[in-house]
Length: 166
Image (tube, rainbow, N blue to C red; front, side, top):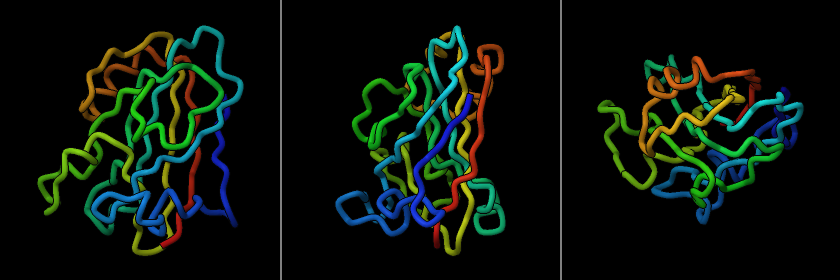
């Protein structure tokens, strides 16, 4: 399985990150999710799951920042732009904005894509999992729940580093 994201000049397009237009933000956080291309999905895959994690955030926040976790997406070759806000055909979990170490909380953005806002250029690790069956997780699950539920269901996974500009 292979995954790709269309980049502009080697970076995630601005509308999905720190430099997003106001219409694509909530409380100054980018919320419009980027499209994902998937090829060679393995035979037997019934659903997809994904994680988007910023490991470059460790020196900044003290922990890897979870930007997006989702599951039970149809096993298709394309995850469309803005699927997170549209919230159809996808079950989404908590991003790192739920952390007790974060001063601002908004339930409207905690269970969605929360786009990059790096202080300097960061790489974001996108992993897509091909699953032999749905996880049946409920909205608002945590990353540890997803890891447990995908462990025995994963047929194959693919990872991509996505640069985003500061």
